[in-house]
Length: 71
Image 1 (cartoon, rainbow, N blue to C red):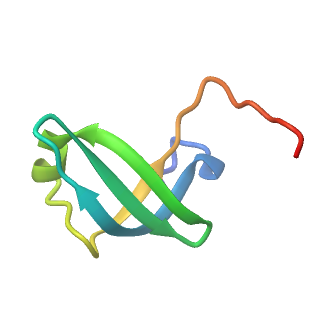
Image 2: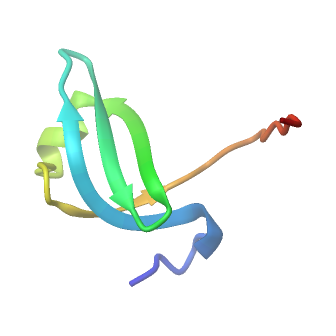
């Protein structure tokens, strides 16, 4: 199920692969069909959402700037 109010190109369904907890912020790796998406979020929502490896989630990407360089 996609979140309707957000452009589908900016969301990735997946499962939590790994959580690296910190006192204030945590890294959450989400395995998607497009690869791994890593989110750095405050630790409180990790607990409030009950995130753990294997949890099914939607990673929402918000960016105000995208840079492109040649290889």
